[in-house]
Length: 389
Image 1 (cartoon, one colour):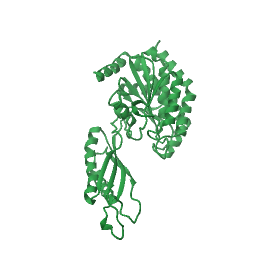
Image 2 (spheres, helix red, strand yellow):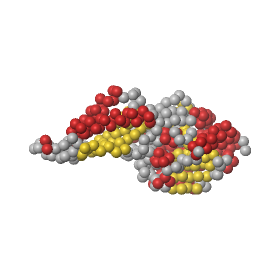
Image 3 (tube, helix red, strand yellow):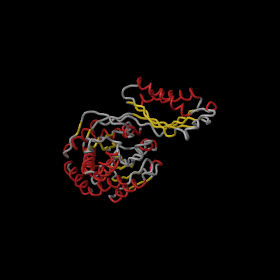
Image 4 (cartoon, helix red, strand yellow):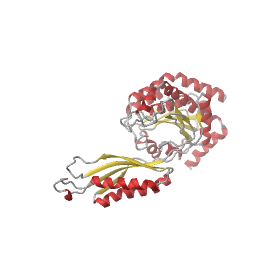
């Protein structure tokens, strides 16, 4: 069967599934679930995969809301990463309902021709992208072992390929002091809130000396319980971003010193705990990006091919392990950016629904080319052999 015929069959299969894929996107959007609590979301996707003939393993990597759905028995493994976690208080303000539905559609469409192409198609459910990094946990557990190429598309204001992202780490910060009456005997206390204030002031001064791509930001999660009591405990969560993991490690040392300064200045005890996994910077495969972009343009989409930079994603960890792509999949959001209520509201618009189907077809066509182009296929298989040696 020719590549043209295989592509036609893949597109037909995706269009047959349009109602179910759009319905899936809307269902995820209507029932947002935050990191590691995405039980209904994972169940909806795996049910659709099982109806399509995929063998599904749930709870992979020790994560209850992760899964691995497979079809085909070829030596080249193409994996699609489905994201479906939401943001606390904002729902799908990052568009993961579109992400998850488009990845599901791509896997189901390519799965229809897996045997003809000598492929194994996997749909990997990757929870907690917004918090802690589910993909990094799955990599540690060996879930991505043997994968030749990995793909996903991410909702955005416009279509873009070959972009990068910032590496990121997160900390949970706590200061423990000693309570005292804030008016009658404040000198008897050790003020944990002062410790956090000193740390934040130090961070504000440090920012002038940081590289331009570096970002430090956070929230106070506990600032004390009563205004007339010297705070005995305060807590915060902070994130640090940089253009690479290597640069991140250097910046992290300097940021840690700011939090230590708060403890030294006040006498409070500092506890600093890593929050989830570090996210690596995104390194997209140039050849796969070009194949995807051509497919998206064939579908009538306008694709920005100029290298840009997204925020941060645990797909970066995947991209350091296997050839991967993470194109942005655009639709009209009224100018709203990700992580806003307005962006979330656009997630079930006609443009978002079209993005689900177009993203599925473009990624599935990219999978077809992975199997059908001899040189590309051999490069992907050689990478698997090298990583397995």
